Image: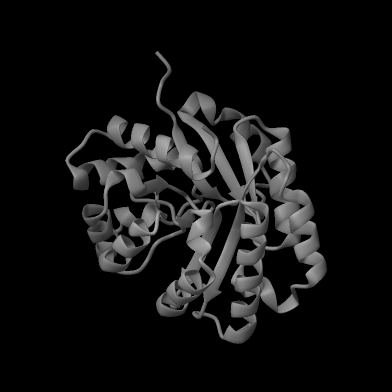
Length: 259
């Protein structure tokens, strides 16, 4: 019988935090229970790095896109590059894209323009979208509805809003990305969201090297630590860890159209 494996739907293995052991770590993941990883770009340089890692490692895939905080220097040439590489067999999504109002720059008008531009690209190339939305709940939802971005499918990464809004996203067909924050004592909103939405709409993610779960909080995160996230989801849902790993792996394969 094939063993159920953790699927990390959102990582950043190009990050310098992995410079000392990146190749060895990625190569070791299957024996540690991690079957599939998506490493995600934040601009063209990191999108290229993500694609290089995906092409080098079986079980590693790439998402390519321009993060909202990087849109101040975005160009149409970037869109052309994203379009050209979107057909690569190891590219599974456009992302991470969206809105981030925590930072004052770039101006929200610039973020919105490139968010909409990349949604249009995702619809053109028929790929799901990885959404980054921070302190921009209403504007993110409005743009998604106005552009009918939900037609592409996708995941709301590092979900941080209310359980009620999560239900709206689920009704639109989106998956909700759940990572280390769900294990934090101050992660109440995410715990409530996990309780409120069906397991069939949840995917696991690290956002590594960031957001390590308890009891690893403060240390470098990696995909193997999703076992702690699965444990907390299982506790909330009254399930076993294996049930969560099996369901979220299935969900992630559907999200990224790998089945």
